[in-house]
Length: 112
Image (cartoon, helix red, strand yellow):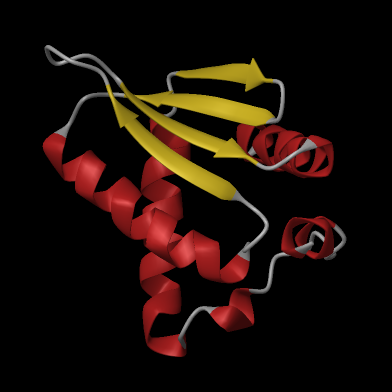
């Protein structure tokens, strides 16, 4: 029942959900992470974003995820680290509506 209710929630980012003292950090993390994406793989319910294997970036992605889930609670976020120094994968999923929302965000990020 709870899953049904969650899928009916509107897909709209609410930056006001991020504490004011963390908003600039969220923006700085976004500026660091989006350009670092090396590959985008379409998944049935979202996208996987390949990032380089960098220790500092891994920590920044984890911090970004903790803030992103506040403003976009409809995302399912997962961080996967490949073995032997392989890439990092940030998976953002949540169904067809989330996939469409994310596709538009990725396209906007690519244009800027």
